[in-house]
Image (tube, rainbow, N blue to C red):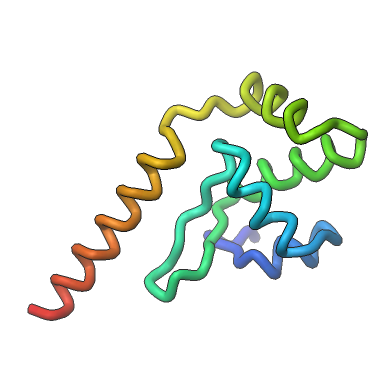
Length: 102
């Protein structure tokens, strides 16, 4: 049974990589855009997990970051810009806080 969401530590342990690598990839690769919960922790969907696995496998095969980004553009389209997505997540968080204060 798959969990609905995974935390960054769970993914790092399962794949044998450092959390900092996943965080770095998130800043550079638009297709890797996990949401954050109310506490600000990253939560990864199954799709996010599959993208991290792809990145990890491409990295192991010797691809550069630029090469990985190019490969992922073919496999996982980036429909929404990362900047827009971050702004929307921030807006949602602010709305939640306003609702809680009511």
